[in-house]
Image: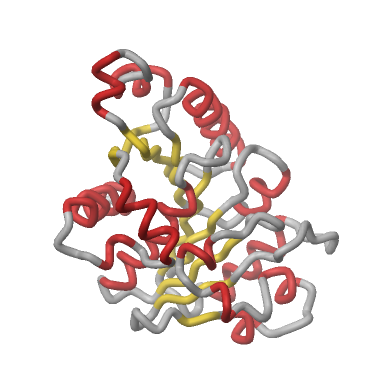
Length: 240
């Protein structure tokens, strides 16, 4: 039975897609068969973060509308044995998509893959509910910013109502110096504001920005402190 993990954020710019791409890479490096679905219609970036933008022909909406078969929309990342991408539509797609469509798609993918990672659109719109329809676990990516934390808490409440039982938060772009100055909320302050468990923190590092722009998951450098930290976060999310 496959695990369906939703990666979400209350607002844009928190590092949701960075986390999704690196979680997928980590799982693939551990020998798992992983498919990543970008559900951020019109604002897709997962293909860029994986360096696969030039290989996208079909997208998830083409699959759901019957334009192509599932296998035609799957792009294999050749750097890994078993990591695949299903891209989002490059435009706001007018074709109807429902929660049932998502559940059926994940059921079919679950016959072949160990993990299905869904990169949800930012915010709490209809796209989130469709993206979360088949999820058994959700990771909310936020940052030490009052607006981001508030939005993360609202998102957590909505995911609870949708029925996603296992939910975690990852605090990204943490700058210890700014926290020490009191310029941004501290970790304890963020933890008090959130009802969801914090699975880990990721400090701000320009190497992450460079890796994102090069289309290379930073965890590929497996001996780095970032990869070690991401592994620990992944273990907490998976309950290992």
